[in-house]
Length: 118
Length: 109
Figure (cartoon, rainbow over the protein chains, first blue to last red):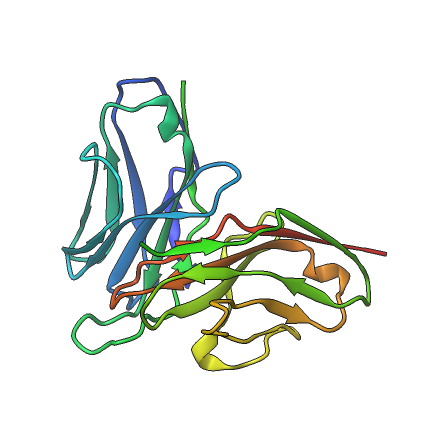
């Protein structure tokens, strides 16, 4: 297993454009979370999806949206890009099970997508 | 709201010296604490979690609820320990981590 994969690796967009980032979780993992990491800061939680449903949302505007597909892969969409959206976007998957887990499971991170907004 | 504080952006130590990376958290309930590490040109990976109570690569961390701390320690630093270290907190029943700003550990000869 190649681990969590993300595409593309790098992306350059201009203000006002829209972007879609993709993530494929580790085989067997049903939970996918998205994080934004601005330079010099730690990752900040954006969304968690489990079994195609949103299970958690961070403090991000409605310009950010995501979805999860039947094969558990996920897309993160950002509309009306701002300069401040420039960051490394990380995807993490885990075997966390909403129906049985009290504690979180280990999250495995992808290499990230570097988004630059000009 | 929960918060994680890592007061040091950079910690530079000599090889063989003890290491302590500080982490303080703010949360009134029962937290779950983690240390993640990112080596140069590698992805973020879990180093250890407090509920496992294990030692990974010689590193240990004890949760001190009274001081709301989860400091990462190693008695003798090695060159290969040079990396970015993030303390993270989970407070709910979901895979949602709150990260600190990270501490870069630099181990020199």
